[in-house]
Image (cartoon, rainbow, N blue to C red):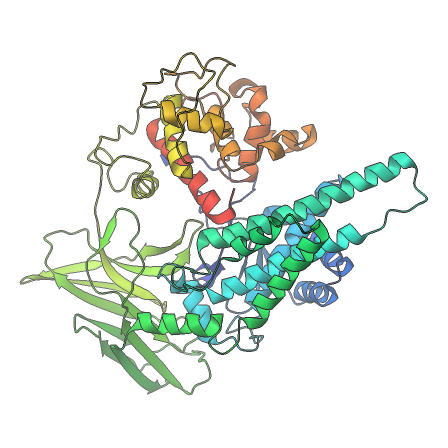
Length: 622
């Protein structure tokens, strides 16, 4: 199992690497290039050191020293292929997304925002690093099993993620404390009136941005449902509690900040109480594992062969000789447990689970190769696969990884065999294609299935992957994907009939500031949407139009100059939107270093873009 199979991947959405320009076309759909993480360069280390200085200036000297020690001990790496903002692995190492440690902006406020963002991610990952079971820094009251439950199954199995809740609460609280500290900073009396006004404007901008981050990250926490209010009926998402304070018109801004900090302090202090959040999360996880299990305990000795029958009797798990140098967790014997998992994670879009779901656990802290053989009733098909859950993480979700599977049909049964070295969940899956004209191995298949699952794309119709997409169809998909409440309010556009089936979607988009039409009185009905137009819609959808329009000419030139068709293949009005799209990895470019903003998009290209925006919103909020 490589480093990535152990890493706990969280929220995220960006790779910025000039050497890797991804595309939405099948021939170069290489978003997950699996480039290895690397030690930070001197310049990147200096950015992290500035983040440490920021933390110290904000009254978090212990955390600042933590960052400096991580750098000295070579425990921080930079990942050019990472979509999450940050990660922590089982050994307590920290991985940071490359763009966070790129050269700092020269503008004071922009620099402040970047350092605060980097500092917040480091603080978030510190929480995880101090829970890592193999890192030697396990926090008080955190158990090694908490990491396994969170990293591998809690998110997809209808249970609360205690480790994430703790990390989010601490990160949100930090933004509040920083806002309070910035508000308290005095502006020197020696400054001129004009300079005082400028200093106050900068100060206000910093505070406003910090408070926006509080709302943003609380909503992300709620969107992920890590607090699982549907499982804990008495748990109100912290986003709702913070909003209640914010909506109290009798409080001043300072009082609101103080009350929010007090709320977070109270929630954090109770996480480890008896029958508190952690205890209750553990109980739910234990219930999912069920009582049926197979257990084997054996001394660790190279060459020992262990064969266990699966709890249902429908398969075998074989360790064909334990590897040398196996590292165990606080035991002298190798302990294996296999559960018939009672509440399994959902299959990936386009697949069905056709066997029990088995949870394999052991106390080894290093990979242990084994062979898994599972038996199912003969399906008369050769496309069955054994899948492992959360063996790798993506920015979409903790997903099922399909293993190389050998199938033998005997009598009325199919016997499937595959090898692995990961302690996680396993099951037999079968593809269940939705569209007759979109094969299961198509590059856009998974995106299409996700949109079908979300009710955005109608599975009852032919997909027609190569057809061009009109502006109105794109808007309908976008409005559906955002879950906006539909409206039939009037429009200034003369080219859209109120009786049109697209009217309410265009009206909803217009009144949610997603479209302004191609002219003040014309939406552009029937016109094929271009790549740059679609990107503009998506930037508005994630609430980043202001950020896009605030980009400096130098920033736009820096990020777009790599595209050789910048002047010929793209409209100048779209430059800010294209730049913001690159920064948020909605799109990046084609392998030939072109952006092709004026190109017309086909159906599956549009579907892929809509899918990416849904992923972005799910992991980052709007």
